[in-house]
Image (tube, helix red, strand yellow):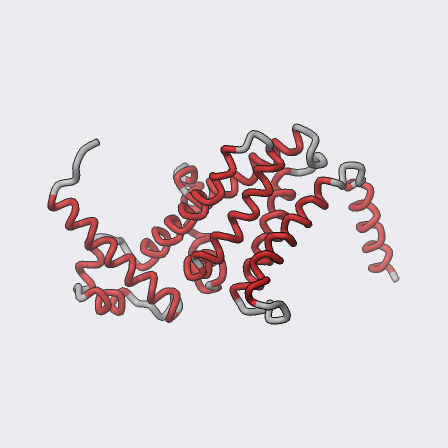
Length: 234
């Protein structure tokens, strides 16, 4: 492994300083209000110096977003040590909640700042077009969840279904619980009890999925569509 030169270390240190300042401003003031000039003021650099490291504010956002998902991936990847895919799925759920509780500001940047969603969607499309999507940590994180869900279906511990839909459902459950806690919506529960209730609640929901093997999804969907059509004609 090559040892970074002094110049490279200094460049990396300046880059980290810029990213730290951008992170604080994005979270505290919002992405739209956090201009490159404001980021420069926070670091003591000129706007031109910021542009020497990042093409624009969007590039800063993407780097921070990608790094945050890298942290989440590390949490979820601890599941890979377990040979049982359903046990891995349970671990992924618990690690997801643990990540949100440990890094609430990162989680907010990743999922809860509405002004960033369109920009990140645009970046995702651009990555797809250039073929660079596999380097996106958010994509890798969802792929890990999908692969685990697929393994559960293949060994019979989950009913066979569209993998994207099933993975999205499980992610949605975990995200909903994490968001309820981070936005202070669990005040009906004692603070010291909330983490355990969240974990047990997510475990319960995932286990419910395990016991629906005999459920006829196609028939239920057809019945729902039939009912919708009937209502629309009345």
